[in-house]
Image (cartoon, one colour):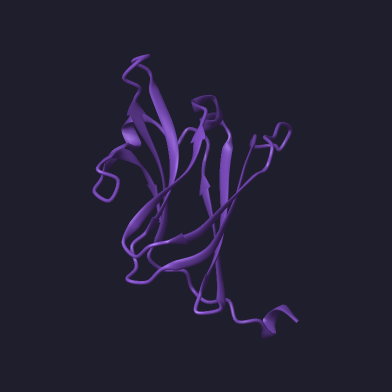
Length: 133
């Protein structure tokens, strides 16, 4: 039964969408990052990303990413994201192991949440972005 399964609380793991100006084109490129703020390594990290409209009439493909490990107090670049998708609900389901125990959390960036007004400096990225805790 689901009530018998221990779901440990995820702490110190965040997702961010950040932008960098491409030196060649002069246009912004947006990337999704996984941030590990813990003093331990995340092992066998799986990230499923998908997007859909509010009414789920339109949706993106599901992308799956695997990271062997994410070191303590570090950042991993997950994917490039097209800014046209910011009008969608963007969902990132993250699962990982800590000492043979599975942790998982869903991070959801709501439509129009990745805007200039919501950008803040993210010290771990050393750039501006929208942070999800």
